[in-house]
Length: 338
Image 1 (spheres, helix red, strand yellow):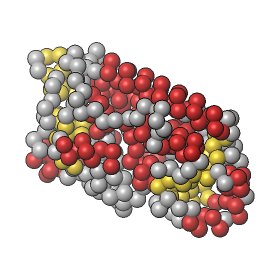
Image 2 (tube, one colour):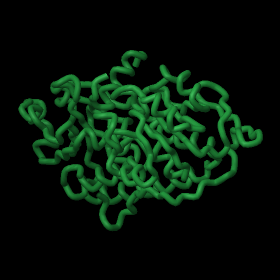
Image 3 (cartoon, one colour):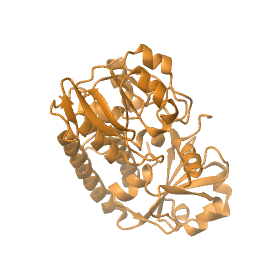
Image 4 (cartoon, helix red, strand yellow):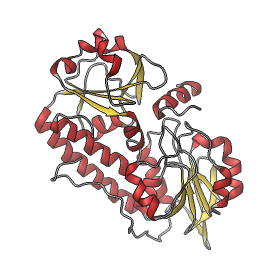
């Protein structure tokens, strides 16, 4: 598959299956010194140095204290927070499948983490030979690489983290990892802190924009002239569910988002609009009469962002926290997403 954005791949997959913070704001950080709890998960049955857990495939026997984890599920953030070191990862850019996102680079370099592909399945296959050469004692995967499940299982004990094809169940995935590693309390504490920071950021944003409405739109990287209007996926979740800002008319409900054309803009009456594109510019979209008639455009309340940044940050815990701060700061400063 060509190296286009995650959201484009999500659309195709779904159809095929039938469907900087200010000085007062705590800044997310990658803690490399987290001490992992050794207590077993409540849902795991222990037997010696292994235990049985339940994943999307059923029951799987895994090491109690794995030393050489290879994660191809996109869970680098979660493993870092849990203090679980890993030797291989597929947390690479959705655009090239090779580049490590900026906020993870220091950790990967310090811990000599090898990249073995991309967790989304949208930019090439996993490097199975490299995974085997790392001699893992545990592999964590997701449903997007189901086609190589048997090959991975032949290399090492393999668990498939629970999620659907849209990859929006980040809290559930995090909690499941916490159970598998006997660290449910660590996850609960982190999520509580995340929600507290979201609440504080929301209050700050609302002192600037009040109850004015927001829309989140992305120019489609694959099909020129079409767009995504977000709701529960990625930046949409951060805006509406975490920062608790009001969606405008035209923002879908109960779905991650919708694919629309430029004429759909006439249904959006947002006071503020985030617009993401590959180069962080409006481009030819600015020539559309429907775009020019948008209330947010006429008010000068458009905040530009780059697709690659939001794809690589808006779907995993530490990335979401950092990107939520960026979105909030854009509204507070009336600036683009930096």
